[in-house]
Amino acid sequence: MLTIAGLRQLLKPCGFITVVGTTSDDDATIAAVAAKCPDVLVLHVSDADALHSLATSAREACPDLKIVLLTDEDVAIPLIKASVTRLEAVLIRGGDCLEDIGAILRIVHRGGAVTSDYRAAVAEREPTVTPRKAARLMSLSDRETIVLKELARGCTNAEIAKPLHLSVATIKSDLTRIMNVTGASGRVELAVLAVRCGLVDDDGPWRATTS
Image (tube, rainbow, N blue to C red):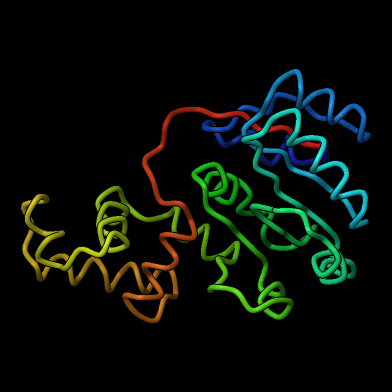
């Protein structure tokens, strides 16, 4: 579900996303969430109290709801500092992240989290997944995705290679390419990236709501 009408056009090429509604005010958003129970809600909010109130009401109506905040750069840091609301993604409106919105929403739906770079300066947390890294992760081949998932589970190269009927050298080559694509500096960062992105198999089409 969307609260930003313009996003519908950007999501048209994403066949794995069904936009179930677009709303323009808080009451309509909460009513739509209660009626349709979308997987993801994309919000544009610039006030911490309003964000907390809307997110709380939306999750009361749909407990498993994942929330993506798209906000303006000048209010992003103050908003995050003041907010106590759990957010699966925080993105800068008008930034490059909109080019990758489909990949970002896919990761959020899988249980991952995506943040713009500025958030790392707001609080000391585990390494963030930037929109660009999220998009790069989604560009991996099916085999590379399997290799990355098994790496995140703690498997050695040999353990990854055996069920795939591949050589250890091939797995090493795959991991090197994955690091180059994602910008990860090593196996540990690569594993963290996979975990943060909720790397699991797709479970079919899902639904988004925006406001």
